[in-house]
Image (cartoon, rainbow, N blue to C red; front, side, top):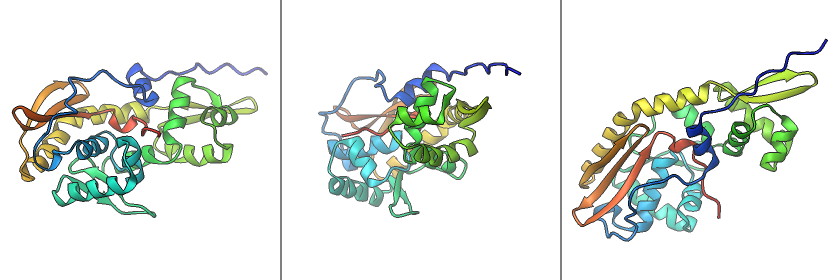
Length: 244
C-alpha cells in the first residue's frame, strides 16, 4: 500500500541565512579604529567578536574565524580571560571559550551541540533540502554516513532535527527545537547584552549601544573618535566558523 508523501518542511529565511554562513549586511566597519583598553588591538577585537558570534569555540575555532595563528589566538584569549571579558569551560581535550555572560545552564547543551563537528554542515544541508536520506546528507557534507549519524544524534535529542521512515528510507527534516532556540535567544538578547556590558565596564571599558533591532544589538567600545563596533546577534551560534 503506497504511503502518503510527507510534506517537505522549510526553515525560515533567517535560519537558513544563518546556517548558510553567507555574510549579513552590517553597519559601518571600524576595523582601523585604534580602540581603547583591552580591545584596542584589531586582532583581539576580532577574537572577542568571534566569541560573541559563536560561544564555546576552541582556540582553533577562534583562530580560524579570526584568521590568525592558534598561538596568537591563545594569547588574546588569555588576555580577555584575565580582564574578565571571557571565560573558559573545560571538558574533553580542549577548553572552550565564551564572552562573559553569554552562556548559562539553560543554553549550554544547545550551544555545545552547535559547535560539535559536522553539526553546522548537517543542519545547513537539511535546512536547504528537507527530507534528505542519510546517504544524501553524507554526500552533501562530504563525510561518511557513520560520521553523519554521530553528528545527527545530539541534534535529534535537542529536536533540532527529526527523522521519519518513508518506505525503505529514513529521511531527515528540520524540527521545532531550532526555531524555538532562536526565539528564546532573541528574547534573551537584552539580558545577554546587559551581562556583556557589565563585564566590559568592570574591565574599565566604555561602551554604548549604537543600534537595537530584533535579533541584534550593535554596540561600540572605546572613547569618542577611537571606538570599535561589535554585534551581539541572536543567530550568532548558528553561524558556521570560517575556514582557511
